[in-house]
Length: 331
Image (cartoon, rainbow, N blue to C red; front, side):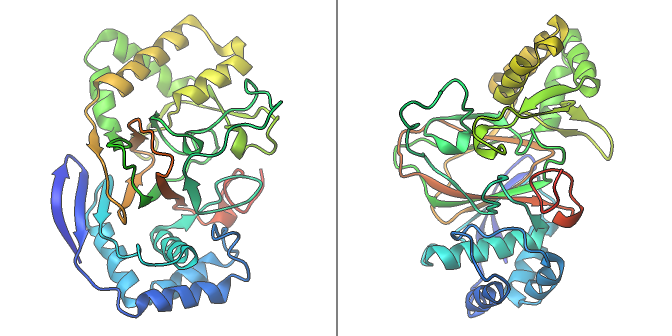
């Protein structure tokens, strides 16, 4: 089903060695039966997603792909030549939604559109008169690099998984996908007494993560969520987005103690400069899946505005039982 190309720690690159046959049509037809509206080809968390998931996993090729992905036991998996590059947007995104649902339960990206499939590409500049200092632009809205982070760090229940599909890779020799295993980050922290102190503090001290404006209830509203960076319940996990924390501390200066600020700066230096990382320019028609609790992801700088990826976040918990704005249920 999947042929190994390269292994880097717990991150694998493989290539597809199967034919979708008629199953692409079967997937699209089944999804179309359950959605009256594709929501601009972004879909939304389906209210009967558990039943739809069972039906989709009865389609043989999708079932075998889900099993092959699970058997890898990877923290990051890049599947090249997925076989969707010849499809129109509606069919392609329907198949991506189905792949995501085969792994768990896709969540809505923002509170306003409820889109599941999110376009990662440069947006137009802010409208004249918009307060640039008030609007918090997220990585997926602009060209350039993206600092290492976990998705939904600013929500109560960050999804356990995410996938990215490369529609158009950057043609400027930039935009490489980056992944870091959080165990390598903790290993770096444990090399010094200052690092060990920072780790202990960040396991217990809640920090404010500000919600980017595009995901907030309104563009002008300042929202943030308090949570520790590291948690140990159920195994080591991490939530991290340095710019979100910086903006969160600006909204809550009473929390910005010298000890916390020093710990965050040290951790950011390790994340951005010292920890070993997976670093690859992934070609068109590649699917990248990653563990959102145990890896950080980011991208190298690029200038090509035509670069275009599709991102879907995936929860292990059905949306109806999730807490927070990234599922069906409200806060």
